[in-house]
Amino acid sequence: MEITLFAGCANVSLAESVAEKLGIALGQRDLSRFPDSEVHVEIETSVRGHDVYLLQPTSPPSNENLMELLLLADASRRAGAARLTAVVPYFGYARQDRRASGRDAVAARLVADLIKSAGIERVVATDLHATALEGFFAIPLEHVSAVSLLADAVRPLVTPQSVVIAPDLGAVKLAQRYAKSLNLPVAIVHKTRISGEQVETHGIIGDVHGRSLVIVDDMISTGATIAAAFNAAVAGGCLPSATVVSTHGLFVGTALERLANLPIRQILVTDSVAQPSTTLPIRVVSLGTLLADAIKRLHENKSLADLLVHQ
Image (cartoon, rainbow, N blue to C red):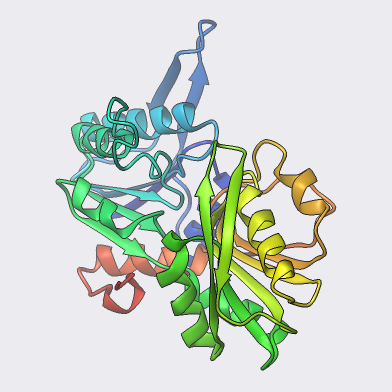
């Protein structure tokens, strides 16, 4: 069965990197918009009987990118694709995984249902906001991780006096994985989210006195969580500098300005989403090899066990 890879508009450069490592050319498609902003998708490469992969993070603008993914899937299915897999390096709506106030939508479950309804048979995602999201899908979800890639990238920057910081309770298991790889202790910040832009800390668990910080999280959105974690650690007597490590660098809202006010040595993120132009010390670690390996193994019906998140 021939393999074909299509890219949405959200991260064409990553798709090109994956295609290069697979030794194939990206499939041709036309993505356009009508004057009323409706998305139009047309597959220009024959996919009849092919094993088709659609690479599209549902990053901001989330609604547009999600719709592109769904329409690419529908067009591929109607064009005769034998097997259809969505490669979603960043899965938007993941934070809406429960009813926080009792009358809100569980958007993560709805998006999972929409993906299945579009004819997609399998999803590959990278470092989901919560591993429990796997249970939202009625189709197989391959949850791969960039932690080993990022840990290798940050290793030259750490010393025996460094400490890995989990900026909230939800990041504790992630921090433990980094700490195990880097052979460092962990400290945990107790955080309460007030709004999308504001968080409040209530102290820190663990020894940070005289230590340099490695703040880890699955994503950097507005930067409020990172800033709050740093300030909490400073109150605990840490050294006034930090390295930040995150799989997904969204940098929305006032994130760039907020982070620019912190004494950050380096920010390491992957290219799961396209990165903005900035003077911040951002280093991008590519997911190209990881995703190409996952796609190749799926195409050849081989195990992905050593690539998956196990928590």
